[in-house]
Image 1 (cartoon, rainbow, N blue to C red):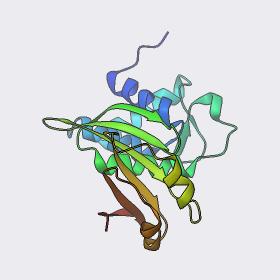
Image 2: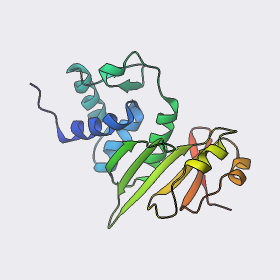
Image 3: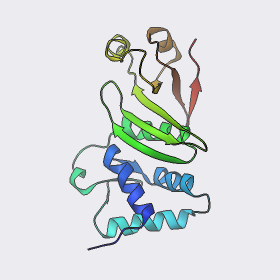
Image 4: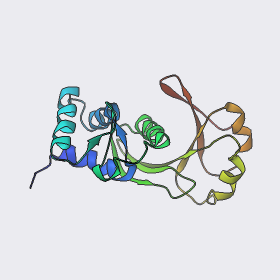
Length: 178
């Protein structure tokens, strides 16, 4: 039996919802918990998790739980994790994949409050389906629509609090509705 550190348990708790993560995402995740955590320490945590077979490397930078090794990498989930990391300043208190149309839902612990978010991937042509599957206005989550083109903003109709995200090179740009 192996005893996991709280940091390793935290990484595995996030991984249990996402099923895939990049090395740099795990480093950022731990860095938000404690700004004194170094890259070397975070990478050592991952190496130990690999050594005790809690994670396996699919590529040089992407890891997954061992039982999912043969499945393809979920690029949409990696994007959703990037957005989660952009929107979280301290700790992810709760996380889950789905339910549809959401790719990832999470509760972000901030200095004096909690914020709930849901990331939805919007492929060109799927806007009507997304509109039909969104819950009513009583939902307390802020929805982040990951779009590929700014013109998609005009096709998404919701009364939920929301923002749009577009990939711009190696980061995401965020836009308000309207």
